[in-house]
Image (cartoon, rainbow, N blue to C red):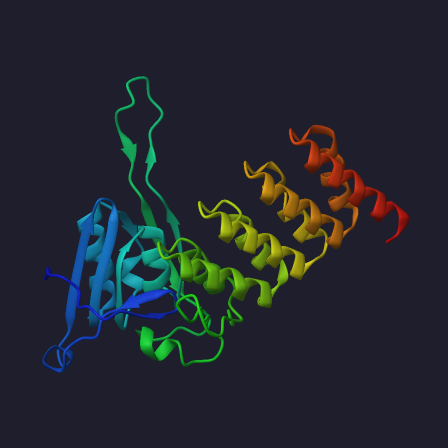
Length: 286
């Protein structure tokens, strides 16, 4: 296992930070795995996929099974990702289950259950050489593009891949990446997008949470209204007001139920008043 520091000049592709590999290194396999403070950094070029996953297992203490199914090579680079996000990027062409580490229930609090990875096999259309730079140019693959600017889209026929790409983007430390992901999900629509936007409603950044509300308003429908449940409990008065307004615009039975809840229990008088007004408008058919 080689250790070192990834190269500079990052560029975002599929929610990844990529480091260019010098030409003197690109001609031979390169594999670097580094774990620091529970965050994983990987720089692999033409590395054997099975060897890379096994190296990560040794580095992290991961309980690994089914790795004999892995074949092909991989070129992927990212830094300081959770194990869940890292495997979503490395194993994009494979079916697998991942269970994060859990603290064991005991009186003294000692002991824990290690994270577990089970490789189930290739997807219906596996990519033998899972090179990130090649994957983003293929159809039916997710694309979360631009660092907070430009076009934003999530295009894939594989819902699991879209969800993993979306999760990686929404957990990115860079606010611009998360904001772009929210816009991409608004454009995509559907229940999968709503589920991811529910995660965005718990973002630490108020602006991201406000954008998520607008995205759910854009998607519309009863499922989107239900997705605003967390928003009507948010600590921010401004955000709760925006959520009430969005529920009034979406309408439907779930929106009415949430508005009825807000007008009955919200601690802010203005929020309660607006909820009453939105309920009246919905009942009047406006």
